Length: 234
Image (cartoon, rainbow, N blue to C red):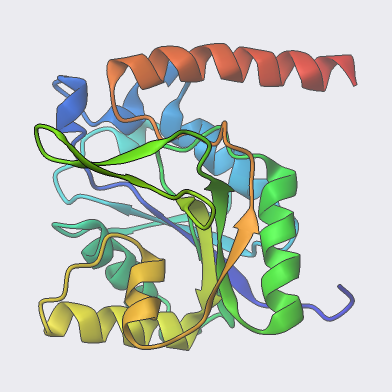
C-alpha cells in the first residue's frame, strides 16, 4: 500500500459492563499489569496505518484519566448512552479535520491480532468498500425459545467481530440517520447495511473474543499469556 491514507480509530468505552457484576466498568479490569482498555489501545497503536485513536468515555468515568497513555496517540471524547451514540460522538469530534477512513474496535477485545487488523485495512482499501473482521460459525445453531424450533444451516453464518472499517463520511451519515430515526443498531455494519452499503466479511481469528462475563475474563487472561509467550519466542 504505497499511497498514504488518513485513518482514525474509534474505541467506544462508555459501557458499564453490568454482566461482570463489578463496581467499575469492565474495561478497567486487569489482565496482568495492564487494564483491558490499555491492552486494546496498545494493540491499535501498533497498527501502522492508524493515525490517531479516539476513545469515547462516559462523562462520569473516574478511571480513564488515571491510565498512563502518554506514549499513545489518543484523544478522549464524550461517550453516549449506547455504543452507536459513542461512535457518532467520536466521529463528530473529527469533523474539523475528518479522516478518509474510520476503524471502530471494541474496548473489550484486547486479544485482536494485529495481522488481522492489517488484513482488514488492506482488503477494504483495495476495494474501496467497508468491511468487518468475522469468523465462520463452527457450532451447530439451534433456533427456539424453550424448545428447539429448527436447526439453522451454518454454511453462510459468520460471527461479527471488530475492528469494523468504513469510509468516514459514509459511516457518519449512516449512524446519524439510524439514530435520528430510532433504528436498532448493534454495530457499525448494521448501520451501513441499513442504508444499502456493501460490507465485506474478512476472516479473522476466533480467539478475538469480547470480554463480557467473568468466564471471558479468565479465558482472556490465559490467551493473553499465550500471546505474550509466542512473541517472546519469536
